[in-house]
Length: 261
Image 1 (cartoon, rainbow, N blue to C red):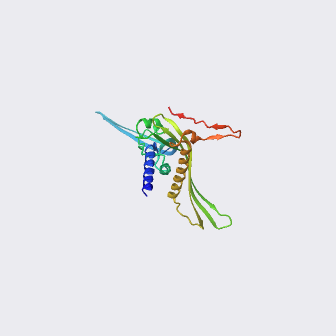
Image 2: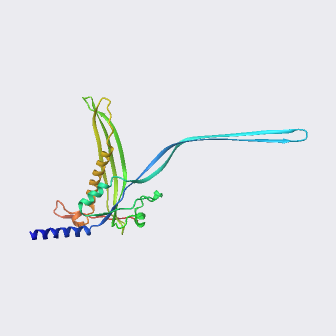
Image 3: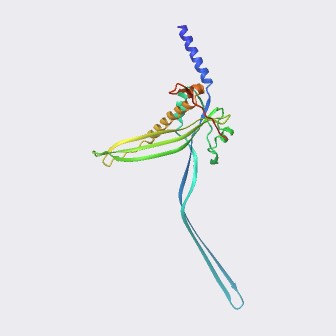
């Protein structure tokens, strides 16, 4: 019994030691950038009038002037909207924590009105937005598409109403000291709320369920690819693996490192 307890305590101590050595990672909210077009219509009207009078010994004079102006214009103007989605990263963090290979630190939210610097990760690292982090997992949305579709079911009086969301995000795992990119990949998430309906019935789709499914599948895909490209507890040789060719010769896969400047 004492041996079992000693073995358990040793195991817990070893697990705690491994976790203490795990790298600290800050996971940012997903950045996005999109072009927005808005309609405008401007109407302006003004009127100006003056009255002048003069009097003399024999006669007087009176004159009046009036001027009016009217301006009207309409059209569309476009601008680039940048920001961060405060969703979709909770499950990425959860999957990373479940692996037991990382410790997570909370990054500071991007609050600057200068959105031009939103994608400048190096500048954000230098400004101390990721305190205590060894690495930053920076993600940006490359595609986000909502679809609300109604389709008849052939041979029946029913039809399907489906609300779905597909999200694709690009990620980079960046070393906060050297600015090396340790991992880079695209991850996707998808979710759907589908109902079978009859007649003129309509239901309100469950958007919360759709977002939850997207977040979960995105987290699983991102965590899997991080483990494939960067695993702090495994040597690069073991992680990349040595492949044996048909000729019996060993082929070693080379690991490229990208450095952001």
